[in-house]
Every structure is written in C-alpha cells, then in structure tokens.
Amino acid sequence: MARSGGGVEGGGGVLKKGPWTQAEDKLLVDHVRRHGEGNWNAVRRETGLQRCGKSCRLRWANHLRPNLRKGPFSPEEERQILRLHGLIGNKWARISSHLPGRTDNEIKNYWNTRLKRRQRAGLPLYPPDIEREIALLRAQNVNPFADADGNASANGSLPPPLLYDASNPFALPPTVPSPSGSASASHSPLINQNYPLLNQMQGMQQVFHHLASQQSPQPVFHQHHQDSGAAALGHGGFVSSGLPPLPTRPQAELPSNQFDTSSSGSGGGLLESLLLGDDHLPRHNPSMVKVSSMPALSYREPVSSRLPLPVHGAGSDSDDTSHCCLPGEDMHHGATWNFTFEDVKPMKRRTPSEAGISDMFGVAPGPVPGEWFSTCGGSTAPSPGPSSAVTDDEFSLEMQQFMSLLPLSIDEHSWNA
DNA sequence: AACGCTTACAACCGCAGAAAC
DNA sequence: CGTTTCTGCGGTTGTAAGCGT
Image (cartoon, rainbow, N blue to C red; front, side, top):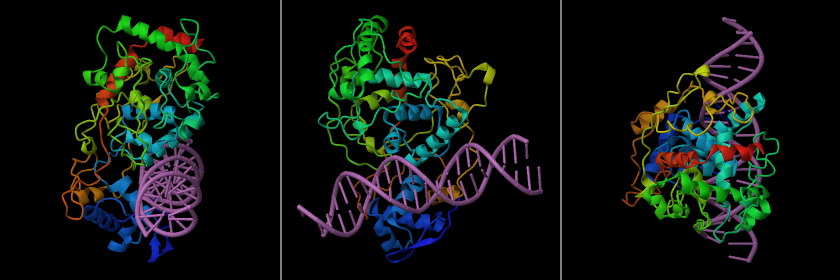
C-alpha cells in the first residue's frame, strides 16, 4: 500500500510522503490533543513531523480522528450512499456527512470500486427502488441545490445525475402521466428550467396527497417531523406545496463528516434531508453525538441466492427492502438485479496501522466510544469537535415507511409508461 | 507454487474558495 | 483591494492482499 515513500522539498526540509508510521500518527494525535484541529501547517513546525499540512489533515480526518467508523458499509449505509449519489452526484463530503463516522474518501473509494464492478458487468448503478425514491422526492418540487436565496447554486447547474442518465435503463420515461392529465405548475423556476422531467412528475404530487389521505390514517412521521420542516409534509406525511423554506444559511465549507446541524441537519437542503428521513430541528447537542454501535442487520434474502449475512452490521434496517423488490429481483426487466448486498464482500483486510491507532486511543477498532479532545490548548472550551455523528437510522426507517406508502400500482404505471 | 487479475484502501495531486494579511 | 496562506474537495494513482486458474 505504500507509495514510494520518497519526499518532496518543503520549507523546512524534505517532506515525507507515503504511508504514515505509528510514530508519525502519535505526533499528529498529540498535536491535535493539545491544539485541536486546524492550522495543519503548524503541525510540522511544532512537532517536527515532516509532513505537509494537507497530509496531516487528511491523515487525521480519514484515520486518526475519533468516532470514525471503520469496516464495511452496512446495507443501510450502502443504500444511503446510493440515494445520495443519485441525488447529488459525486459530492462525497456531503454524502459522508450523512453517514456518521464515514469519510468522504471511504465513500469515494467504495463508489469507484462499485462503479467499476458494475460497469464491467454491464449493470445499472442504481437499484430501481432507489431511483424511485429519489425521483418521487424530487417530484415533490424540492430543489436541493438552491442557495440561501432560492437561486440555483453552482451545484444546481449540474444535471441530476440519476434522472437524466439516458444510458440508464431505469431512467424515468419521457412522460409521466399524471392522474389529472396535466402536470401541476412548478413553484420552482430552477426545476422548471433545468429539470423538465421533474416538471412532468409533479402531477404525481397530487396523487400522493390523495392517496395519503386515504391510506394513512395516522401520521407516518413522529411529532417532531410534523412540527418542523417536515411540517410541510401534508396530511399523511407527504410533502405539500407549502414547503418550508430551504435552508437559508449560506453553505459554509465544512470538513468531511461535519455538517451544519443548526439548520436542516445537513447542508444539503430539504430534499436531501427528506431522502434520508432527516428532520429539520436541531437535535440536542448535535455536534457531539457519538456513534453508537452499528444496528443489527436483518436482511431478507432471496432463497435462491442466499449469501452469508454480512457480519459487519446489524440492524434496524430490517425493513429496508420491505417496500421494494428483493435483491436479485429486477422489477423492471425481470432480470436478476444484482444489488448492493450481493456486492458486499466481507472485509478481508485490515489496515496495518489500525492496531497501532487503536492502541493510541486505547480503544478497539470500530466505533469509538466518544471521547473527544475537548481541551484546546488547555482550555475547556469545546473543540470544533469530531465530525458530527448523528445516526439517522430512525429517520431512515421513517423514510422507508413513508416510501412504503407509495402505491406500487401507480408507481409501476409511471415507470412502464 | 506461480502468476495474473481484482478489490480495497491509503495517499497524493490539482484546484477552488475562504480567510488572513 | 490584491496577494498569500490555509483549508477542503474531488479525481486519480499506487500498492498490498485476496482469489482464481
């Protein structure tokens, strides 16, 4: 894994490159313990570590900081990655902000590996149910790319990665019939201009309202959802046209796995939150929530292709596939849908330095019981803290319940039209 | 056992935006 | 207000380990 291990000439001598040693890790960890994160270029000055600031930051963010969750992705994490990638594309930092303890680099590596594997196999990237979730949420007329003023951000100029992939066999059809025969007018100029396909889908919103009122005698979301941003979820938990304003704070650059918890819980906007079942209320001490152990995994497999259960997760996502096709079953083409879980391979290798890092913190690899370096230069002021680690499991579950209400019949018509 | 291919992962690079000067 | 420095992000590369032949 080691690179050449050579060095480059830095200001204070030869900067080392290549893999980090335990001694280097310890220097960096000690430095951060004393001074907190940031000012990475000072690390070399103050510790003598022959690494550039960028390298220090990367090492810290990806390997040394507490609350990192190592190991294979759980099925629910994979689904979240798929959802978010379908929604926002290669925005690894934003995606990782929804996966507590996961780094952007980790997700990026996962995706690239998956991408290569699936492309080689000639398989589509997204499972149909994920595409559906994204498409339907988009159809709620929420613009996740709007900035504080509701204008299209730079991201907004990007085409939705999922819905416009003409090569994607699961891409939406050119027309989506609305039950009333006409799509409702959009309230979002951006969506109108840039996402014509979404415009066509907006008529579905009316159906959702109708069906929700019929099918959901009790609210799908907990009270705190209804009280807040998701209050716009209309009767029965569906988003109505009376959407709450999108997060209005300008998007501050946040480190990987750190996200703005003061507004929507992420910088990604309402749709992103909805997609994940996130709410829009500040949570108690959100910046310091610790990663708990991975929920137990219970995954229903097709009998014909039973695979060993992934050993890494366990979970609250037992209903994860309840509202969609089973893995291995392609609802659209009748072909085998080789979805995420078949892709999951057991972790075979461990980072060589992992044991050393664990020793450094005195903890076992994996979810780190959340001790954080709250002292910064001896003060007791809260440090910037670890990357926010908010488990969205319960919200994801609610999101799944929400999606489960979507009638497949209409859904299927929409896709097969 | 040797070889080649694939996978997983760590780390580097270039670029861009924000902050500091 | 221009320049420099710092920081973060996304893309890419290199390599060890696993696996099949």
